Length: 117
Image (cartoon, rainbow, N blue to C red):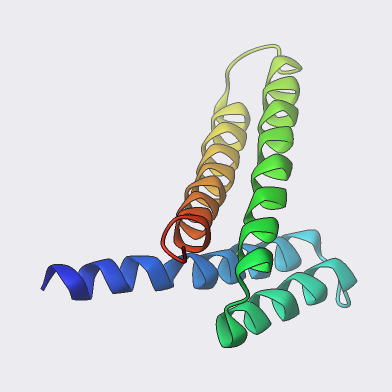
């Protein structure tokens, strides 16, 4: 039972990152978003071929981008005069989106850096 749960958790990050990219694509409002298409393509190829170096580079870049975006959220939060419902929504959606991306990327880095030795 533990092996099945562990296998499921180790297979989950790529799919969660694809879901995060799809969310980004729809929230950007662009019908053709080449960045999203490229990220989805690379993640699907990673699921199929499981290339170790790509499995480390992609989540590392996503962690750096997410950390930068967390700083951008904090900066945007400082622009609110009062902590109203819009500020709460920004904080909740932003933190949950980027923290889940960081967690999924961390699991993916662990999967390809530690377990594939």
